[in-house]
Image (tube, rainbow, N blue to C red; front, top):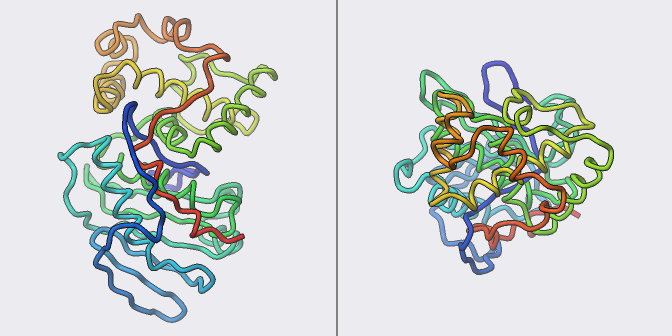
Length: 299
């Protein structure tokens, strides 16, 4: 969903790491201590940490650890994708609004957001991020366990792509590979079914897609985007090479960028060597896969 004046991504997804990364299970209640203040404004409870301001009306779910989880996810995402170049404290902070129900969620985001459980909205002004916001639903199938890390990944990537919007395939491909293994398997199966129906993209068409596709192609969009990001990461020195490739592609075109970074002769050659339905399974070791948000779900 793209709202006028905003760089907005709506999804049901999560987050990623780089091959070879290792983690230990970190439950929400075990997240590192974070300095946080709590205030009240009418029926809203507001928790503020160094980089986040979390607002909710919910009294059903204990969200005291959510600021610490957000801070941990931000640190992990920045370490993977941005290194130390963009580790400054966020000003403005990222607003995280936790909605109790679908009705509350769509009242803010519009009826078109009804199929999602999370939405990231980034407001830009002349190369500066002047607004960061994530809206989340507590009543989704997976609560916030899938949505929060993925939406936060979009916010972190905005620090790298301040002057131009990162292409949809790259933004969502990174997000899909961040999902839990169970969700990745679900997405892979949905992509296989889409292939069987003939609803797939040529790589050239996927790379140049400027908006989210029609519903009957969305499984292919998410699945193929994730597959392509995985393919590139397996051939990269680091995640930054993938982002450099994306940046160069936006400036010089995919033919030039693929040749420069991966010695591949354009999108058609990429189609031949990267895409087979049999290569859809599997994921990446995620540096944040151990951060378990299931305790924030409403069942």
